[in-house]
Length: 275
Figure 1 (cartoon, helix red, strand yellow):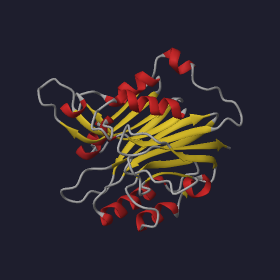
Figure 2: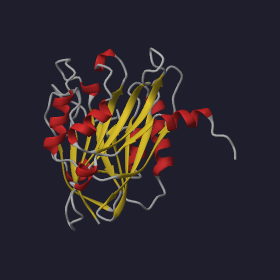
Figure 3: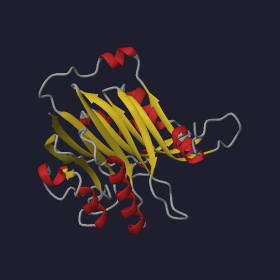
Figure 4: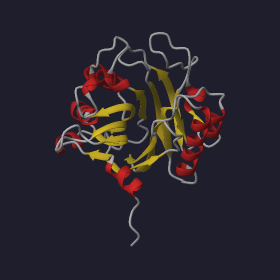
């Protein structure tokens, strides 16, 4: 058997999947026909609000009040640094909210001291439903830029297998971001499974990178959202860069931008019906 490349081993090492206790797993919603699937995307800015204070409980309350079934988080620290108290934020949210979790480390550094956890920064998926499979694919990166990834969770929702893809594209290079969008298409396109693609895409709707993605998946906001859908900056939002995209097998019912100062981004919530 051919040996796995070091790059793939690093990517696999940066993936964490946790399952709640049996009691919390049993509390997941039953498979009732016609029940909506609520989906949330939220760049949490490592838990720092517009006041500069890191407060995970504020973020948790936003998620809790949204009643989301599956959540994609970006800018999530895991034993990263003093800025977030060295906390494993993905696990903290899973335990606080009693949800399944999968974590993808796009930055994965050695600990400061031997024996301590690795310092990681990336994205996370939280779900009321068990996460059957999870994989993180590194996206194209230009020299000197931050590594980005596409985390894909496979979740069974009311008898339907759903792909839930969470990503955070680069913020400061249009050409790099377009290459990343093309890689996302390469990884996800061609499957017949219902798919949700969401995250902080760092691009306005009329850009080439967004047109690349919306040529394959439908922008939920354009179908059922009301208003401009601005998500950044939270104190005075003037741009829409956080998205939920979907395949035709998922029928959107509503979409809303939630008002909160718990992060510098505003979260986007959408409700779907799974056929």
